[in-house]
Amino acid sequence: MEKPANDFEGILLIDKDSGCTSHDVVDRVRRCLKIRSVGHAGTLDPLATGLLVILVGRATKVSQYLMSLDKVYEGGFKLGEETDSHDSDGQIVSSMPVPGDLNEDGIRAHMASFIGDQYQTPPMFSAKKVNGVALYKLARQGKEVERQPRFIRISSFDLLEWKNPTGKFRLACSKGTYVRTVCHDMGKRIGCGAHMTSLRRISSDKFHVSNAVRLDDLAQMNASAIRKLLIPVCEAVPSFAL
Image (tube, rainbow, N blue to C red; front, top):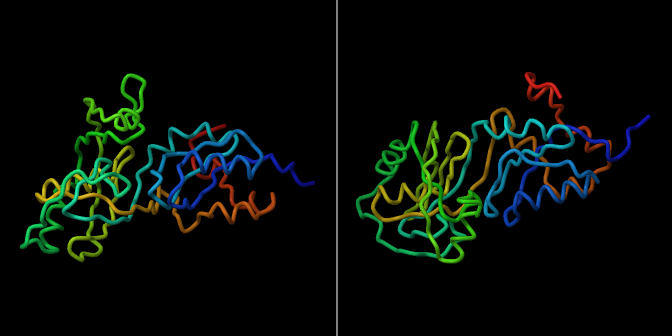
């Protein structure tokens, strides 16, 4: 006998489209599955696409563990322009010429300088809260407040393509890393400024975007097909008992 349509539980891998928030994805999954108990294990900015790990039913209990997993991203950057949000969704706040002698080897050397343990200051345009208020709300009011640097680890930062003044990269990092701020800080080190133009999350530890489903496709599936996509928590996180 088939289970009721709303009796879902497990980890669902979604390939997020650009333009929507992680909360938008959670809301849509709730409507598709007709279940309230849905969460995610690590946000993606509206600009970003790719892997969003969605937790359904009692799987929400392992959200903190899954959020702590290392991530891999691919994206693009543009040198010579800084934005207030550190990505192309923001307003340009400064423009500077790209050094005429900058080449691929030079960019790779700057990228290599980011590899390792370090502290990163969260950008003002972020959901991180200071005194209970999300930073992006203060940023929209033109305010800037002191932010506590957070510990991060960058395992690799590779240049995939360079067409002056734009490039593509692949970055592996720990939880809590603002990739757009890495691009911004790289521009500072080069001396001309930079911002991130695109971002796609490729993986979160063992979970890979190649195994993810787009929301539009999910909406066309019946209950049985959706259940086949759900990864049992006991398989993904053997040390946790629900």
